[in-house]
Structures are given as C-alpha cells and as structure tokens.
Length: 192
Image 1: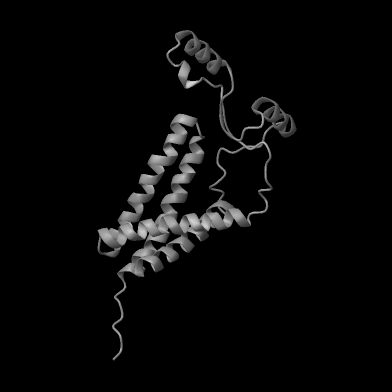
Image 2 (image 1 turned 180 degrees about the vertical axis):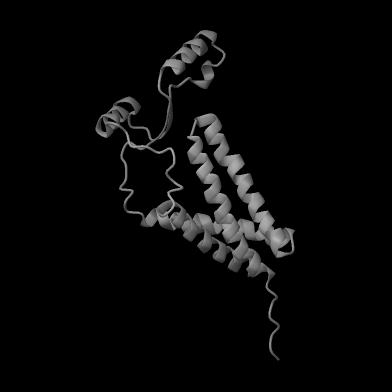
C-alpha cells in the first residue's frame, strides 16, 4: 500500500511539473518551428504519403537495399542534397486543442512510471538521499536510452533533447523527493 500511495503522489507531482514545464517554461517546444507554408506542406503530405498512418523518414532507403551498392550511393547523394524529415503522419488528424484525452493519458503514464520508480525505491534502498539518487539515476537512464537515440538516429533538434533532460530530471527529482519522503515515513502503530 505504501508503494501505491507513493506512486499516486509521484504521478501527481510529475503531472503538475510537466504542465508547468510545458506551459510556463516552454520546455516542450525547443526546436519546434511553424512551417513557412502550412497548407502546401499538408497538401504535399497527403499526396506523397497517402492513406497509411505511421512514421516516415525522408529521404528513404529501404533497409533491404543496404546491400545494393548502387542504391546506397544514390541514396547518399540524395540525402546530401535533400532536406531531411522525420514525420509522424496521420492522414486524418485530430483537434489537439481538445486535450482532455491527452491529459488523462499523460497522468496515467506519469503514475505508472511513478509506480515503477516507487517499487524500485521501496525495494532497493533505504534512506531519503539514496531513494532520491535512484530517482535521478532512473531519469537519466530513461533520457539516455530513449531520447538521446532520437537525436542520434532521427536528428531531433539538440535543444529539444536537452530540454527533455531538464524536464525529466527535475520532474523525477521532485516526484522522487515526494515519494522518498512518503516511503521513509514510519508506519503508525495501531492504537490499542
């Protein structure tokens, strides 16, 4: 029960921090820019990508062609002279200004992540500072294993990746501190 309460506390703290980080501090926006001609880009996406939702990388080389030296050379020349794009594509979008479903999913995600962290903190270590150290280590581990590869392989802007580190590390330190405090409280003995 202590782990579950710690997870709920951590989920709320992380959710509130995430809202503050994105809405007041702008940590969710570095490297994100408006297109010069949105309507033209949207039209070309519909024409060039078609009806299949998914992630598209442009220019594209089919992994099956990696052994074909001519295809690799042609791709290399095209990649050097062309723009690069990593596109999350939905042929039919959704109104992202209606955030209730996204906010609910984010809170659930934060709370489940806090549950995993609370379990590790509760089982692995004793003491506030050590539990806080676990929170910091987990935040850095997640950033290094998930976000840095997006910069390395998919060319996400470095500013976006750096802001994500700040968001994750500060958020999980705040949530971790609240969770470590809760986990460190002495259980009350029942009154006889």
